[in-house]
Structure formats: structure tokens, C-alpha cells
Image 1: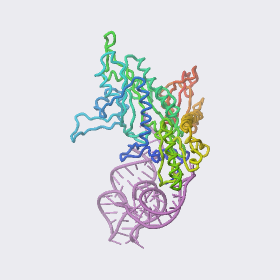
Image 2: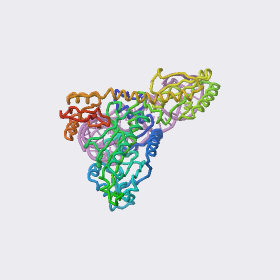
Image 3: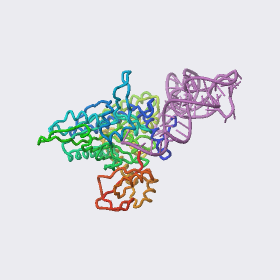
Length: 478
RNA sequence: CGGGGCGUGGCGCAGUCCGGCUAGCGCGCUUGCAUGGGGUGUAAGAGGCCCUGGGUUCAAAUCCCAGCGCCCCGACCA
């Protein structure tokens, strides 16, 4: 880790990713295998993700609450598919306070069961519906192979859990939250995700239907970046979540759940990052602008720092950091803040003091091309425009990259070729779990989603040759 | 769970095959001086149960046995 430069993406993508996460001080390995410490810079990014999402949740009528970490083992067993899906990856507590527990507790892998249990107590009438609760928390899934942010034993996320009177309302909620994730990803994180439906075999254990936002990473692998599930009445029946309707008839509720995790930080890293390091979208960046003062002599320092303070004052609407360390050179700071993905760098030196100017360097355009010299006067407007431009440019670049790497093979042979080299396949698909399993087996590509946006009409399934009414994305995934 | 790699100052490694002097190197860290518009130079310092346990030997970082841990690649997953 003493090398100055990161391993280039093209040389070893996962090495690039690991080095970047650690050197940008987003996260570090914990003493327990598969666990991570989210460092202050990474957590600050997560906090910005949280507030962008939380605002959207609140705007659509959701409220936050907190449910316990421990769940009685028996709860999980009440929903058949759910327990089958999660059993292999549970952490189980059998001893508490020094003595064996009567019933083992599981550390929540997700909270449908315990929230379902509580909902059954809280919901009695149609007047109690809909119930729209979100929780920010952590969960534990005992994964075989782990990677910082992308898959760790413990991760942080939000999980929304709602209960509704009708199937239609539940489906509307599920789709609404998918839209919120899509909007968040595109407009806050500049990650051009594709919203769609999961196939039967890829859906959440216990769901009727699962929806997902899928993103293409810099190595063209897909990353499921958020999910929204229509749980039908599965959990309502397992946990007796019932209400009396207007006609005094007892009905089971229709429930949903939806989640987005710290994995999304991985999506941001692998969507925008380059060989210099992290590139953060301005709207989520913990530091939007870093100011690097440049001077040699004491009298220069005084004048430069005065200008720095003045300019900083003009930028009070932004998240600004002044890097006033004297023990490292400006060049060192340039590289360090680029590694850490700060969208905009502002340099102020003696020449700028003389000319009332500053040097601006934008992170999304490396080298000289991204540098410009602008007046100190009105800098707040210059900077606002440039940050907006960076935000837009990141989305445009990522969208272009994604689209360039989506292909539409007509045959399975072409499909295999593309999966091996060039990214994603967008194909006519006649849903069939066995065929899907065979494709996965032979190519390691999975059905990422059946997108909401469809061309319409029908086509010939690339695999079975049967008539298909929809197109689907296939790709190798994280 | 299969395959591979690796445990030596904070970090990255050399030394291990073929046992032997005071365990080296780079980075980082501390202090001084110079430097400062793209990873500064220089000088002096600080810092080691060589993963753990056992064995072989006059002598073990090095050989043998056992264990633990981490990382990477696959099967499974937000």
C-alpha cells in the first residue's frame, strides 16, 4: 500500500476497488472476517445518502421507527420460503448472560418477521391502514465471500415495511418506492440505474414480486443497488396481520418491504471512480470543494490565507474544506483530494491574490482540461454552476458507458460471446425458470431484471425461440 | 465449502529452499534545515514475543507437526 498510484482499473479491477476504499478512508477491515469499519469519510457519505432518501420517504408519508436486533428463531420459521432463503446465512445466539437460552435468537438478516409480529398487534381496522414505517439499521447475513461495502457480514441499510388494505395499494407502494430509488440513484448519485422486475428465481425469499434497480459497474458487471418487494399476503398470513374492513369482514393485509444498503456506496465508487481514485457526485459528496492555499514566505502566507478566508466566506452554501496543512506540498494535496473524490478543488496562491482570481480544478475532467482560472468576485455562482455541471456530466458519462455496453444478441451463441467480453445482453425473453438456470449454469450470467420500460410488441425468445412479450437484461453480477 | 496466495516495526515487502554473527529495505512517523502553482529534498532519530503452540538442534524467522487468521479466484447472496 506504499505505492503512490492506485492499481489501474484496467489491470486489476478488484484490486483497484479494494485499494481505493481503504486509501480514500471510506472503510477498513475489522478484526472479524467479513466485517468492515465504516470510517468517518465513508459514513459521512452514507449520511448524505440517508438524508436524500429519508427526505423522499417522509415526503411520501413514511415515518421512522426502530425494531430490535434479536428475533426469536421461531419467527423466521413461520414463512416457508423466507426461512429457506435465509437459514444458511443466519447468525444465531444461543447463550445470554452466561446461560443457554430456551429459544435461540437470530440476529436479524432482515426484519419482516418481527415487524410482521408487531403489525399484527397494531393493526385492527382498515382505519389503521396503510401503515408506513421505515427503519434505519444494521443486519447480519453470514456470507461466504465478502467485499467491503458490496457484501459484508454486517451491513447498514434502511428497510421500509408497509401494510395495506388491498393488493393494488401494496403494488402501488412497491412501485412507488422503486421509483424513489430510481430517482435517488439518478439525480443524487448520478448512477443511471435500470428499474425492473426480478424473475421468480431471483426474487426475495417470501415475496410475491420483487423489483430492483440494476446498475452497471465500471467492469461491466451488474450490481443490484436497491430492491422493493410486494409480499402479497404471505407475511400477513404467517403473522396474522388482519383488519376489519368497512363491511366488518376480517381481512389479511397486503404488505411490502424495500431496502437500500451501504452497498450503494460500492455502486457510486464503481460507477464514477477512475485511476486517480474516487469521484463523488457533488450532491452526495461530504466535501464539495477543497481549498488548497499556496505560498512560500510568511508574508505570502498571510495574504493568501486572508484571501482563502474571504473566498471561503463567499462559499457558505457549500461544504468546503480548507486544507491548511503545512507539512505537505500542494501537489500532494491535489493527489490526495482527487483520491478521495472531492468534486471541485480551488487553489489560491500569490498570483491569485495579485489578480483576484482562483484556480479551479474539476474532478470529473482530469488534468489541464479540467482546470480553469476564474475571478474571486462572484465565485459562489461560478462554483454552483460548475458543481451542477459536474453532477450532470457524471450521469451523462455513466449513461453513455452503460448504453455502449448493452447489446442485443439474437442467438444464444452471440449471447455467450457478449457475456464473456462486452457486458450486458438485452434480449427477448420468454420466462422459464429451467432455461434461466441453464443459462446461469453455462454462462454465469443471471437475469438481472425485466425492465419496466419495454419496447412493446412481441419477439422471438433468444434462447427458446418461443414468442416472448417482454425483453430482459442478462449480465454477470456482483 | 473447493482452489490459490500470505502471516516478519504502523503499512508494503526481502530474508525461509540450503538453520549460524547486531533481522534488513522502501513507505509512513518524530525533530531540524531548506522547499512549497501536480505525489519536495536533506540530515538525524523512534519503533520488532519474525501469527500461535509443540517438536528437532549446540543454535530456529528459517526445518518438522498441529492450530489460528486474513486476502484473492469459484459455488451461494442486499
